[in-house]
Length: 617
Image (cartoon, rainbow, N blue to C red; front, side, top):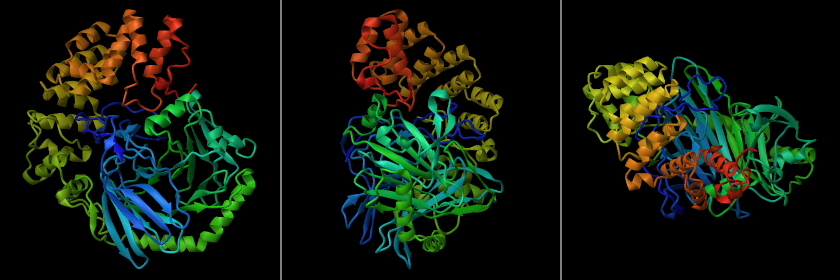
């Protein structure tokens, strides 16, 4: 399909403090130790994608093996209906834990808040063979929580529902915060409505700092009609205790889909982009063919900014089912909800659902069959580390982490376990893959090496020991990567002038590294160091100066210097901030200031259509 290039991994440690973290999150750096995927573009060309197909007499499911095992398409064969929103292109955008994310299909978000760290990465996949028929399994090692997650899929003959059973294994001797949300994209259709077994919903007011309000779905029916919403919004259905957790989307013609699960997955959510220009622009940014979608979701908690406490040495499994609805009149809330309940009572009576839940709980523990795909090598390296340290196994025989999955990023850490020598030196092109605090005792044996000091600093930073992080990075100097890390640390501690000095030293040592140029532009602007920014831009190579964030910095510098004609010309060019973050207002703020200084440029509240990504008023 038409696809953008994903590009390589960001070589820098993910040190920036993340905002909007879940309630009770003890760590402000959910991206670590993962490296960002932020080098993608927007030029589309035909590209093949590896898939696995699970098929029955009623369903045909297509999974993308290199993109998180995402369920990309689910066709109901008797009617020919596509039950999901299928994005016809591969176009990443900045929405996920590691930046790159794509819309469409069904994704599985495990461990840490946000769109999965694996959403644009390969996962392990294998066939499964059971008395219920052939199945399919995906799994990976989630490095932040140190847990294994897997999902088993079955499409039984004679059944209109695809079944999947997630499983999370906590091998630790202590409880951990756990996150899981299944996100299902469906086409946004005229007169479509989202239904759930409740009369009430919670909605954060994003214009007032996320304040939550409880609203009646009976008295305010427009809340559940996506095409009647103005702004992007998430709606959390307040399903009462004792009700089966489900969520459905039904079009005006009565056709739709329903997602039902075990009680443990009791959270249900609707996400809509809204009908105002900003939401429409985001839809086009994710799918240039302008095929709009919404999401219906299920999670372990009432709202997404929450974690569920997972006890020590615990395994969680549950069952989810997803299938078609027909002949549902969605116009009146109470009868429509009752009609979906009736369908579920017919198709999935609770005793039958409980029987399948028990059977799938057994299936997910059985060894897999033929391997179809390899994921990252971090699971194999963690298996080696746990064995080296005399710790319990990462998981059981249901999954495996083949050593052939170990790649360049992981190899240095596998070699460290074998040789007790850290072989990554300052002369390496990049620092390679980063690790978490569990590696500190092993790495300290090689701490005399500058490369080891760089990584020890990253580990100390994750542990919250910022003084030790600084000492380790200072010991690693002169080193462009360490100067960049020190700049991030100085910024976090409010030392903007020192941060600017450090990032400029990093840029001097790594003049062709685009991420350094990006961060230097942002940091100098934050510090209002316009003279230094002008000098930096003048010294950039032409290729670096053409980067989107460098072009934006030039426009911001022009604004400061009063060169308003140049700023206006910037907005006449095509929008090119490829990695624009969800809810980021950088370009919009520049437009507003331009219009304030020169009212003839336009309305400050209405930027040019191509530049309008507003998600709030």
